[in-house]
Length: 78
Image (cartoon, rainbow, N blue to C red; front, side, top):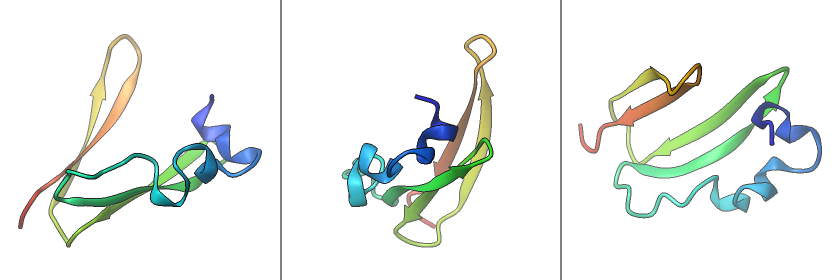
């Protein structure tokens, strides 16, 4: 499925975990929820709920091949 076009038919939220979020984050002390925020014109948005205002950093990793990945590193404590 094309993530950027996933919200065009039906509710993407229903397809990936309902109102509880995209994935189960039980066991991750810094996170509360990952929620689908929508897609429009090839841009996909995901909301990340943290338990507090914690420091974070965003990295773009390349590979394998021509694939790029986004990593969001959230601190466990301030």
